[in-house]
Image: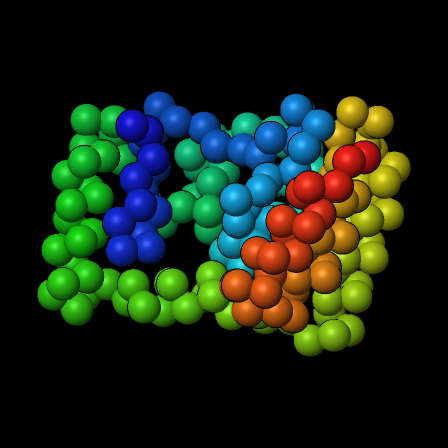
Length: 162
């Protein structure tokens, strides 16, 4: 195990890397396009999803995709420690969960600017084997929705053929 999630606190091993399956010709499903922009912001999510490039621990921490980085042998203890902190009231796990359930925190103009400029950049860089445009359209349509509605939108886009 190189990633751990405890009480919505994300801990990553220094030996791990994370990314999206864009290089496989798909965008992240199973809630990936719903959670990612809510956790790391639209701009970072677009980069992660459109490029599919693996991110090393320092980049994942900088972008906000993880909350802590630890040595592989410390991962279990770090995850259990975050559970203990949550129980003790020292970790705001409800706040972390709420950010993934709520719509993206951008007003309509900010969303339009973020998604329009992102689609232009991605459209110029993407090759025909990837579907970053579908992932971006999905994220844009789901941006104003709560998690459950956003997941339904993601499922609709994910099921479409290029």
